Length: 291
Image (cartoon, rainbow, N blue to C red; front, side, top):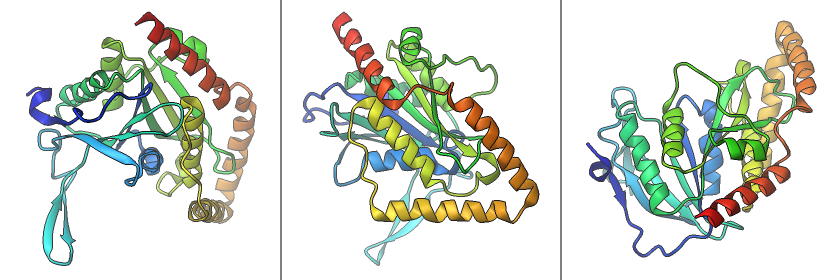
């Protein structure tokens, strides 16, 4: 099985893209509470996104784990909804065009799945690929979520003031994708937001907002509008999180300890989004000049 067997891509009528960057978020291990996929869904709303391709789900999933859904369409027709991995292009988002993949972490054939992403990034001349994730961490729900990052590109890591991956052990498909991109000469960046591990089964719209804001600054694109409904969701879930803590004395003490640790680490955290955006743009400009 190769990329041509599973990837459908229609870009003949697309035209050139402006300094494109690909964004990737996959449900599964790297998407706790759905914060990452929700953030990118808001970057590529249906009324502005152009779908240019898709990965055939059949070879990549154990359908006893990732079951397809039966839906009624227009009140009569029964439709099977399979796991989707669609590539969308969002134009006019600001200083660059975006290629967005919001998909489902595959169970099988990771190398072929990763090769599909690398192929699309090459064909569309993406200057970098940013994987977006959310992870369960020892952080308090009472603080604004922090976004941290890493990259396998030593020059980009130095410019952005972020780390290079040092983890050794079991990995997810995102780790495979980043390694394959680096081998192909496409700079990979990983951004993730921390989700309080004691509330990882709840929703966290505040974490979604943090990812959106950070991405928008770094990439020099327009952030999705925070409408009244979304602001209401942020307030509602913060109130629900507070209620959980208020009902458990031990949890209250634990949250206070997390707050203390969080505040101490804040000064040494990832640079501001504005600083990152300027350095990221300079790095990509240098890459274009070298090409």
